[in-house]
Image 1 (tube, rainbow, N blue to C red):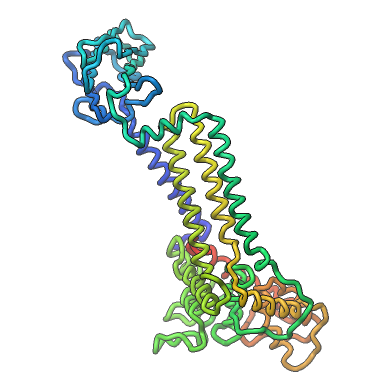
Image 2: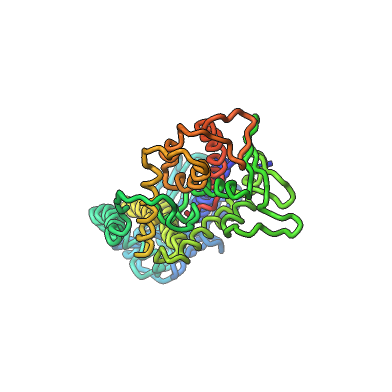
Length: 496
């Protein structure tokens, strides 16, 4: 059983959502429980006593169990707040709560209060001694809510640096938060624009009317697309399949019920080695399509192999191998794959950091929650980095010169003048078709041969009638397009 490419992506995002939901659940579980049965002991029928110990390090224990988020930093006084009863579903005759302070405090330094609603007959609170506060409630109905509050003098408890930092940030002026939140993505845009401007002249496609009638070098389709666009797409994968077919490594068959790829001299099952003349990315791509035992691979076989994993490491390695080849030839200042991955990880890391901070802040940041605007705008900035930074150019002067030569070759491919009929003209069409696909001019290239006699290539068979060039293009392009797009969709997302 295999999972489709889009199904994999849905599963991936579901897993991310579940993880984030789990984090939110764990955060929410850090808040104090309001259940009297968990936090007290019953003196006798329907009479309860709760003992609370506030420690100097701002930790609160209820019957030796740690309860976080009961102490809150304030400007003049710190606050202890505990929801003792919240619609417990049972009648309570008497509830007594003892709050033990870490240090002696005079009565005039403490401010006690309670919130008692929904059917509480009476309540009382007082300071029993310098280190003990007492809260009492009588006749609590099953739907009543009883919250105790104590405003404590500064210095009685010592909050952690994290808590103090959150408090300081939360009390910054709302206007400051709005300005900073809007400035963050604007600064990101300006920074990325500045980086683009540093190399925009190098990246701008040179314009030339010159033509050359053959490729200026032996770049593979994958290398050529990186040289032109700085990254790989399904076009170069499709062009690579055509290149393999033209060199007699594979055979493409169009059937009535689908298609299949036949294995020719690409792999020797006896020696278990690939044929000479294949580049590293071509070998990896072939191993994704074919198994060592089978001589052919149908549409169903390819989809099954792609469905074994959520993302394919092999396809990612195809990309990486192409990037390594082009980098070794000195056309880029650094490996584009590493450059893309660095900014992708930076942006992704910032996004999830901001997302987690946003989720955590929903529960922890005091009202008004202006700090959440900051984290939201940071997520926007992170997405800008992920989306835009990988587009930055890194070509060297040598790379720009090589690109200029290939654009002269493109001028030859898109020339509207028909190719004169001569022996071997169709071989030229087939040979240059992969490059035309990469440079997005396969239609213009085919038009130069549209009125010429056409013979089905030796590397392609079809059970459907293919009489002219238009039939061939309409037959073979959907096949390699489907396979290449499926392979690209299955690669690990960290590689571009």
